[in-house]
Length: 483
Image (cartoon, rainbow, N blue to C red; front, side):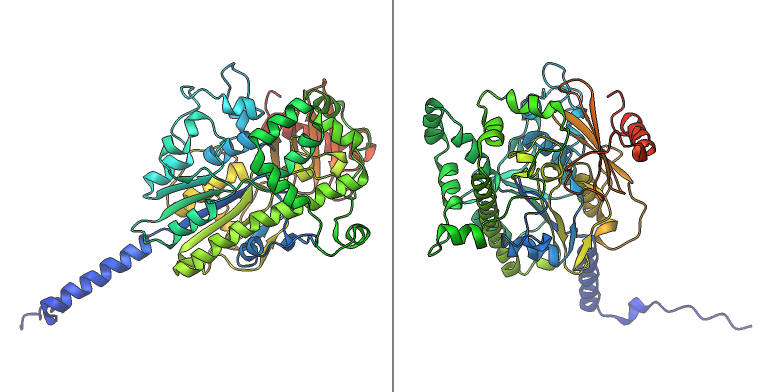
């Protein structure tokens, strides 16, 4: 019986140089497949969701922000965890509510002072943050611009290479230079732009006494210069024509909410500089419209910086290797309810732009107007997902990657938000519940489908009794247990 033929190895048919070449090609192929995208997070300060032309705002032009949205996905229901600077940034870096942390006095973090006073040696202030996770995933870390973070999240200390702390001037060019350079490893870059935040100085300056006016001129010269530039009227246009054709009108919810919570009045009055209450009580309608005009111009200034970053990315030839995320740390009330600044949990203050683009991976032209996104809870899980790792964060946060890439997934049906004087829960169907605690127990139930501008509330309407009871349970048992 003849012996079976031995199987001949294909390797024997190749010469050594060919084998070496094949090995290199295989290695390069595996390396390419294993390489995760560069990630650029562009963060503005105090930009409401409506403040992009792609959101339908006809009183400003934001081609760079629109480019990201139009070449990827734009969410219309993205919310911050807390509508003020430092608490929101703590969430972005840790994937947790600011209230997860305690300040040096043991109080739950709900405002800027508390967030900046989180002890670095507290049990909660661990290494479970964006920088440590992405470093472990093999990313180079780069940070530029505004920081406003507690000591345990200081960009220098947690491993970022800091390009600059100038959030108005050289930041975009520094970021552009880094993008154009060659990189052996994927990088994560946070570009933290300050504007349109300088709108804050309009009311602050208008209601400052003479002593504080001098301090402003001495310490905030750049901010006031940009604000004055934003307040300029277009050339060759009369004042009458300007207000008729150019200046944004008053918002539909210009007047305070019917039966507004007493906590808001208390909050406005307790500021020693009195600019919040001053603007509400003394600004004329024309002044409020000028506020809206300047806010739009400051947003366009930020968009110009975004454009410089995008130009560098396109020139580098790495656009299809880079995931870009664009959002803001909170919004601005911008005349709604006769309010400026942020803090309160009205939509203009808590809802922000959120867009994502990665050409070839995220389908272009998507607008998601259904899912509730928590920028603070969802950002870190999303970054970890794209970096190929798992991050320990608030379990109520989720990776947005499936939504980015058009997959059908089960998603949250409600979302919690914290604030200095109140907390809120929003349901997917548009019911929104705010519980105030700054002037005793107060609650307000809104229906964003019936009344999207929150001009009134339905707390005592018998038709909403069942919905009120249900959302109270969600508030107390799921989002804010013990509060």
